Length: 350
Image (cartoon, rainbow, N blue to C red):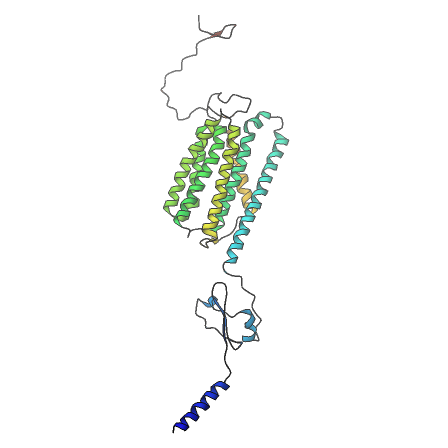
């Protein structure tokens, strides 16, 4: 009995040794998703679930072996590569469009000056520097707003939303209010700066919740008054040296804000790419804004302390009449006649 059982075990062991061993291979991609499973170099079809077909697929190398009648599909671009490539293309495109817009704007203004204003040197002395700073400010602000407009950032974090409202509201109001404060006075610079800063701060932060909207409003009020006040106060004290530093720091803030948005929203795949703003949209918005603000500079009301050129007095001339000033109804007394002595001293009535 034992001898028969021993013979049976030996025969089973020999049969097991005669069987061909099998080899199981599983291939993964960089995201640890299964690409293919093969048994002895024969690919096995992977099971798929509804909504998850992208997580399990055959590798292109084995697709032809599984189904000879079908052509091998194109290798798919990894999920993390396409958003990063699109984000860089958007940044490069906006930078190129901003440079082209600034060059075209300066060329147009130079052509207008050479053809119509070459003999009016007082306009260049009074508004030349400030139109240049207005060009730089508007081009940079339009580029930043265009970059935000290129993405859907409604799913951004509350911190990023507050930064959007605060940065846009503050920079629009400070840069525009400072330039108009130098040419038109503290009142006009504050009003225009607050209005534009609050509007753009609220519009850009509207998708991010009420806290971001509140930051946009606060930044618009603060930046409009502070920008105009700082530049007006600097008029008697080397304002032409102050303005390059002031403008450079504001441009750096916009650049760093763009980098922050890129890191927090774009590369973090929290913000989907919408439709990037092209050169035509960027150029049109810049020309309209610069044209409106330049006209307001020249024909708008002036305050008692404005820039009148490096060789002119800074404080002089009567300010524009206040239409809201109360009238008491009493007649204005006629001015007393005065004379002037040979030495230049004033002489009262006899």
